[in-house]
Length: 158
Length: 443
Image 1 (tube, one colour):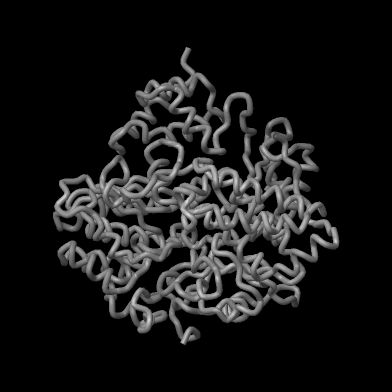
Image 2 (cartoon, helix red, strand yellow):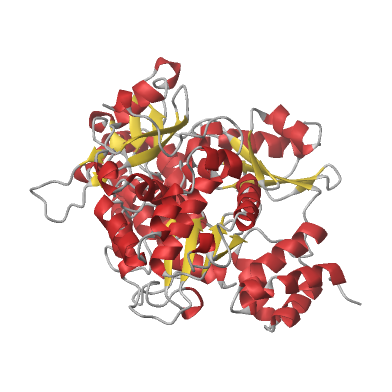
């Protein structure tokens, strides 16, 4: 039984002609899989490796370097919210905001809350320092006004 | 002079929309590309050299000169990589450029590609810039439909394809060889140089890596000419033969303790004080600035007495900072503890060290542990000596690491010890504890 759907496999193959090596499709493939499955299961690593003509160890080596990807023991919740704690955000309350949000959800950064509806992550600079403190919701940056605002976003109310 | 300056790079930005191809063409867009395609590639490179343009990504190396490092008469392929991994704390100008005016950047990209003879360009973009990714994707589609990309661009015989490639949240991918490794599908471990990417880069082929704001400048240099570019900024120092000058407009990011954080475009050479008072509404809450980061945290700190330092390629270095960096100015008010600030910068670099070189991996983690101890009231005066030792032994400059991440980690420590030592000593000797709350991590 295949972990990856035929549609993902096809989308991975469609990337091959962009690069002179199939290994270069590793990050695009990992993104596609995590987007759909909210993690990259061990079986998916094997199937990506087979498609890219690599060993599963090579795929896992790359995947584990980037803190972005989750293995199947720690799948993401439905919505991933990153709160920035780098200097421009820290100066405007980023650390306290992250701490308050985690307290109120009874989790530590990286954890899921609200029946896996949300994952809260700590972020280093998100590149939106004029909005500090800022947050990333999936792949878009937003100002994080206060903990109430972040929690509303986390619950999909805003 | 700066009061009268008309923005060039931000001319079409700030309206909370993305400039599409029609609006861009109607505003004279792609004239720079047409001018370039009418020249020989070598003439385009010479034009960029003549303009004095220096890379905006942090190192400040001459852009045109970098292009000449490619091997002559190479059969190809030659690759052009765009470094869109902007993640130096305080820096967000690339994000604004690609979200709001992507064609300005992409025009410069095609010009650069033509100059260096690239057949393929990989636009490496950090994952967090999803809005910018979609703006670029749309703009690239528009370019293909207008023959501004693909085969035989505008009938010139030159062909170029662009592929967007998304990162996965790692600061080190902004180092150009780390970026190349990441593009190739590997962990982003920077490579030992030489060979430099111009000789052996992506997929072991000659490769040029350029920054987003640099490419936007290229667009205007080919549109208005190198002489126009040289009328802006600070001319080269006649007494310093190694100075390349600080020409052109620059995007300054202002964040931290100011009333109006934001992005402004000014001629290179504005001072930190002018930025704070004239463009950022002053320091917030009626306070004073205690320290200012001149160009991303890797560059260290200006003290309150150094705020009149011109933020050109030479100014920050003259007062002991690492350099201009990304010109991301972060203002720290006089109610903030430098222990908290330094802990924050050390924690950042410990988090982002790729782990390849032991001095960086261990040195960044060690300095973070020391600062954590100090902020918890457990520091000793010997800790300052240890921090000093670490800051002098990690990095390219002391010759112990492959890339400059560790130099960037060391610089805030060095500057804090030089410029804020009495405050650090007082904090330790009185056994104070930081009141800044930090979330507990589960490990």
